[in-house]
Length: 211
Image 1 (cartoon, rainbow, N blue to C red):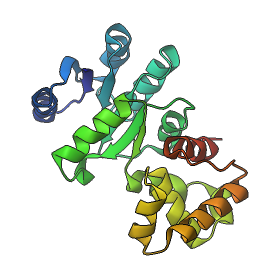
Image 2 (image 1 turned 180 degrees about the horizontal axis):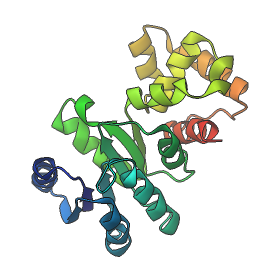
Image 3 (image 1 turned 180 degrees about the vertical axis):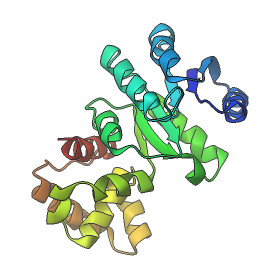
């Protein structure tokens, strides 16, 4: 599986390269600045790209902008954002894409290697992976969600993080039947059709947030 890495810190970039190669990924290119990222993605067309948000020269949102531009040119190009920062505006645009193959993880919240490798595989396979903290920050900025109850917001955050009904029930110490009821209420209030497909549920919610 071919990977492009965009990370400006040399030690982390080298560490990611060694880690992915140890799990049989082929790192075909690494870049350390924003201007190099888009042409590299378009040239290599990797199976997945691991991208930091803030890259030189301005250290603002070059990584996300390049990722969005690449997916505009090559729809569905798998992008996993791995960053210390949440940039709500561009995060919504990336994650709200109707095509899968996206993820957003916070560096300091990736608790183990297996979790990260699983996330890379899931995004490469067209899935959606989100850190619950990213979800929470996006939800905080979405006033339309004021129609939801506190519990419905909690369920939505877990759902958008890719958890199944059973996993949500275990996390929130409620029954699966209660979770199903909350999800139906959420979709009704947001005007979204119910779906049992976890990835479609995530994309539907994010598309709504991006509207």
